[in-house]
Image (cartoon, rainbow, N blue to C red; front, side, top):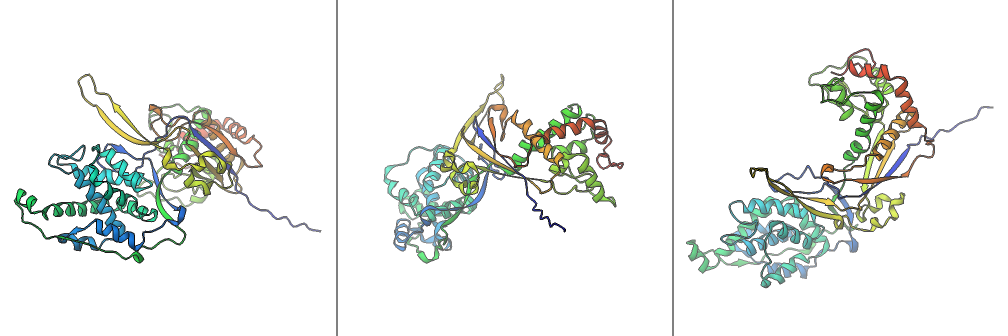
Length: 477
């Protein structure tokens, strides 16, 4: 009698928890401006908002419209805005009203005042979870003094709009900062020229009066799920993949094969061979693929479990997708649902907002003896104690040697625990613990991988040196 066997493929999952011992630095490459302040890396995230993210009632909209009359000369420009954009313009214009004197104030002075405002207005909007936090960050980064008390009522009314509208305003300030500043500047300038005394003082004709604009509350669409899109601080999976696996595994391979350290391209190995391990490599422009690409790729992957795990490209073809998938989450309130099923779901940090974990750091590069090279710069960090859950998932049927390569990398990393950047300045030092390992992991895979490297050392090294990767045909230069 035959027996039917049902095989259910499973994907081995490993979870590692990193806890920061020092502040974590991880700059956002997407934020490029002329300021000397760098933001922590962020990713847009759809978040459920407590209380359904309420929008303003018609009465609340009317109060703000009456509070913020606009010059007749620019009314046609502003009426085409959404109400959220109008509030963003109002706040920006109010900042100009408060601090744009002849000499200006703080960094809002000189010919570059609007360039500085534009950059820091956007940075504050990306970094802040609420409008009040945005205003605090803006005035602090612009280094302006406390404003006069007569403007408190107007400012606080704008900063205290309902939470759903606040998120829309922040989104407008972050995405449309350039046009917001331009519109606010026109509003600010034209409003002054409505005054006959001011117009006479500057020798300009007096403009018309003010006009009350209006918006319909029905135009503000409230999400049925009470959700909003927010820029949430995040440690990128790309960084985790490199720092936890790729770099440690390459150093481990060099040690076990006896490969000497050298300047890139000047050691035993061709530059292309080093690159496929260090960053995945590059296909040369105009390269032609050989006829047996599939066979060559799998021969290389079988001979070098590192490349089976991580993938890579030769001079002319792709080895195919690696077997490792990496994801990572900061343990915080915003990510708590993503942590469900992991012990980290119940950690105290999972109830704390990630925005409360942010800190501002200012460093000074000292000047030389001749007084050259001094630089003061600021950047955001996550505070010590911040936790990161790293989930490493392997494809079903991953060979034992490839699994062993992953475990060898993690073991190497656990002895040299750094996350993020600027470790030379004391940032990103952490300690790690394993939260989850596959039930079929017997703890011998890493030893088997190292034994394989030792037993095949000469042929593996030769395949690296001659760029053939053991295939008999040169595939890397």
